[in-house]
Amino acid sequence: MNNSDLQHRLLSSGLPTPCYIIDEAKLIANGQILKEIQEVTGCKILLAQKAFSNYDLYPVLAPYLAGTEASGLYEARLGAEEMPGKECHVFCAAYREEDFDELLLYADHIVFNSPAQLKKFGLKAKNAGKEVGLRINPECSTQDGHAIYDPCAQGSRLGTTLTQWQREMTPEYIALLDGLHFHTLCEQDSDALETTLQAVEEKFGFLLPKLKWLNMGGGHHITRKDYDKERLKKCIRHMQTTYDLEIYLEPGEAVALNAGYLLTRVLDVVTNGDTTIAIHDMSPACHTPDVIEMPYRPPLFSSGEAGDKPHTYRLAGPTCLAGDVVGDYSFDEPISEGSHLLYEDMAIYSTCKNNTFNGMPLPDIWEAKKDGTYRLLARFGYEDFKNRLGRK
View 1: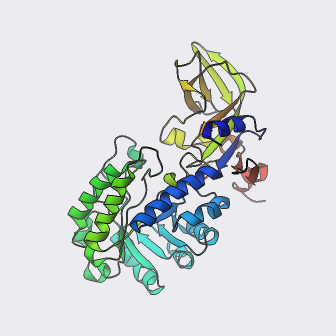
View 2: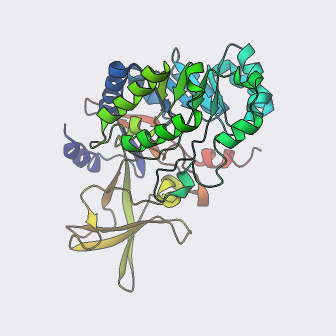
């Protein structure tokens, strides 16, 4: 079934709205691309759970990945429990002392953000048999805009700069290190990685021959159609052969890119001056917060930019937030109360970031299976809203 056929089927599926739908076939297709990169280069690719953590689909992904990457205790536990037998890496900007012993039960690679954190926890991790790493900041920004996602922005708290390294690292603590980690990209191609690696070599090349591995982080849009995979392979091989390093990548988006949808239903259409607004039962503030935080305009099936098609609407959510707006879209035919709309690329940074502001119910999560059937993964109700606020 091609994408268009699936999208038409989802619109007429009769699934309750709003609901997330995760496409099993697309996850497999993404996984096959990532597996090919690993087989050809010998690198290892991990799922960054911060972008996609729907663990019911981990068995679908497990054959194509080396393991999971976590941002703290709970994600580390999730990865260890739901992708057993695979590697479990964790990075956190600062670890809590009261969590660290439990973290050691789940993670096999622990990356620290600063020399101070390495000094505080590194020996304990090493004595527990864990691989120890330090996140570096090569101070090489390759992003335009979206400063909130740029770890190399001026004044960033993420990663150890060369100046910090020279001031704070001693031979005793350098000896604890098995590897280095950097994460500087966001939805970028391999040319940005190539530029970043030049900065890494310039600043930290003196250390690389002494290490076992280098983790190149995430932000690699490997499964995007126009991504330059050959350049990526070249980058990986260069670091492997020059420094005899094992290479890790930990993309989140690339694993589930274009593998999810959000089905929504129009509740009302109102007019304010020259603007016609369709209010649907999906709230960007609650159900797709990255739309507002990034911000970005998500793809919507069978629509165009404002004015491209005969009928233009501003699509918005039902909450009291004035800015609970997705954006302006145009359609071939008018939409009205009861019309169904299908947002695309909704597997990433959606289910793992949503919230219940205004008492908004969380959408169901469904799997669209390869055989054309649907499987309900999660359904939420009033108790899910109430219980996160207190217990009686």
